[in-house]
Length: 134
Image 1 (cartoon, rainbow, N blue to C red):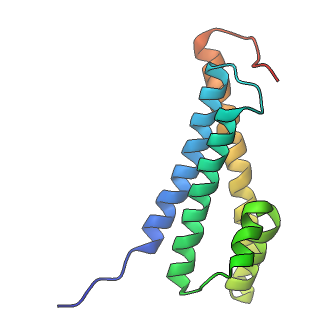
Image 2: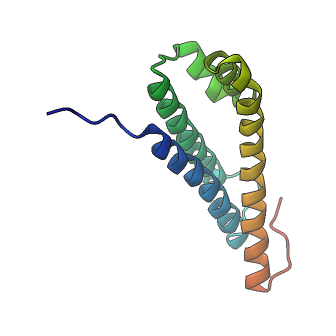
């Protein structure tokens, strides 16, 4: 009886979809509750997004059979915009480094847009044109 290898690609795709979806929901909730930019809920939402991003990194490392050092994990938490591209640069072959890094920054923009779209839809459907405090 052979054990089937995990399907990392599907799991990574689910993590990325969840990441963008969580950003969308965060935008909706922020506008619905008229939260300012810095509060406990947005901190909790940011931590959830960080956790989902870390899940993707865990799956990617497992797929590539790479063990990330502790300093890299700490760096990713403290400055993801620097350390995730570093991780992608170090773990991809030379022809795939640039596209992977561009995809990461595209994902960051997609999350920002998803959050704004969620917030805008909430304003539109609630009929309240008052922007949230902050």
